[in-house]
Length: 123
Image (cartoon, rainbow, N blue to C red; front, top):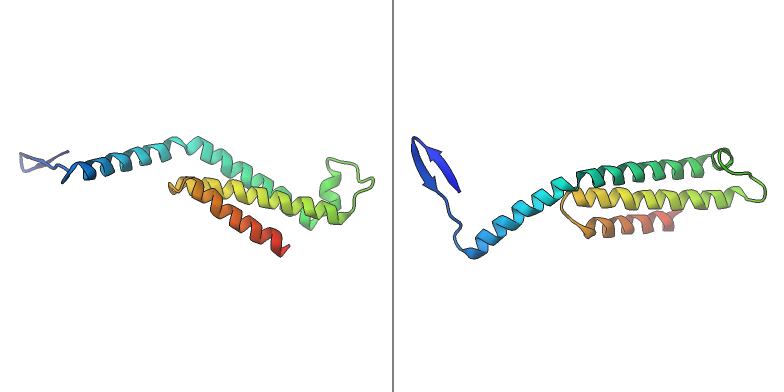
């Protein structure tokens, strides 16, 4: 790489082949993160949407469920179970997008599953 300093050109080279490889990997990682922006936005949107449906099902089970389905033989408790599952799935989507934005890859999803398990256990 080159830098200009008072009309002179300074050439900066990596110390060795490993440093050059690490620099190239870092640039390609940043490029991969930038290219995944549309998928990350979609995951955020889907996650927040599913989580919002989950919150609505937990807080107002009959009213929310009746918007799309008939309340023939289903109790509020089962509707709330569905709400907790929706909230958990939303956590998985948002956690995956969050991890992807930070270059964590699959570790973001793994972290989200821990949060989801705690959510299910606490409900």
